[in-house]
Image 1 (cartoon, helix red, strand yellow):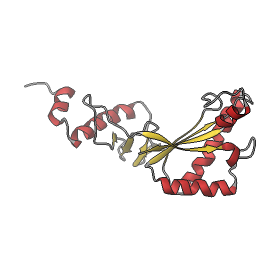
Image 2 (cartoon, one colour):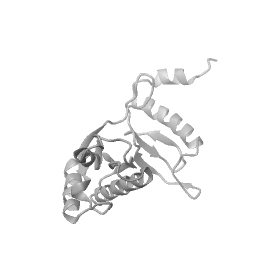
Image 3 (cartoon, rainbow, N blue to C red):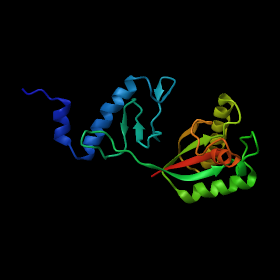
Length: 192
């Protein structure tokens, strides 16, 4: 009797949604063995989520995880959604200096943006200029990104990830006032 290998199995179901599901189950089993799983106490919570790379996942109540996308590359790797930069929040206009609290009028405009954009999910990324310490800037950028994410969540938008990079990813030089103003921003990535 011939030995059934993963390559043979993949060849039998290649090109169909069953291939993606079986590959997702295998990947999910490996993922679950790594200890990175959704658990509440000793019970798995069935859920669906989009990871920061745009891949849609599901997990069943028995802990089996898989990819929701039926599309795979020729190597059997799931093809995930792509993100694009769909919005930039100028923090000088939306936040007071050294604050992560959004002005009321800016909150309304952001909420309308999230209602109108209708992406599958969003990644919110905060940035600062280089005037304070790295530690402070990392904290401030993350707090501001979380404030924008809270507005998004209030509209029912799905948040894939919230990140704060502080001064580490400047858009312009921090040697001029104009450059620093460009660096003080929260970027919104839309997953479609």
